[in-house]
Length: 128
Image (tube, rainbow, N blue to C red; front, side, top):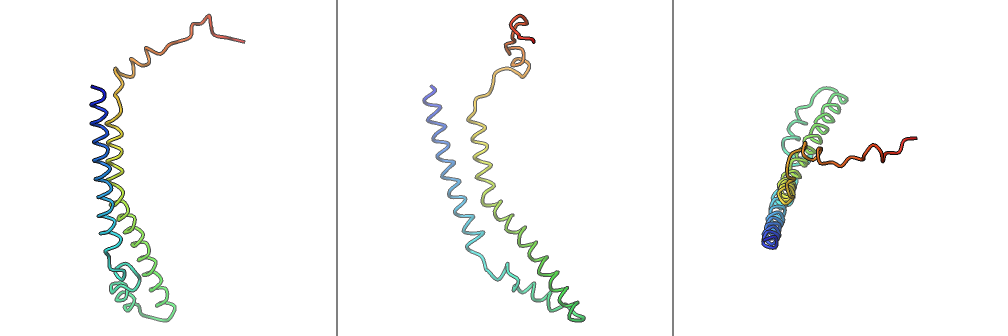
């Protein structure tokens, strides 16, 4: 019976591994490789139009454009973190769940484990 359960767990782990590899390959391609590079850079049409709207003196235009570039950098960082979480999150969750289900459950409650803990008799304790 134990060998059957072990084979079932191994089969489940191999299926999960194959699903994770497929998930990572497909989402990595969609999220990182199959994208328009101008969409995320500072030369995107959205950023260019916002920079053209900057007016005033040279210093004001410079500060306006710098603020736009910094905001785009923050947005890009959050976007890439989101993409990375989309690629790696589900396989990590699946691995965690498989690890949790494969463990044996302790019998009894915490009180049972505390009550069963062996104690050293007072006569055997060394006191100086």
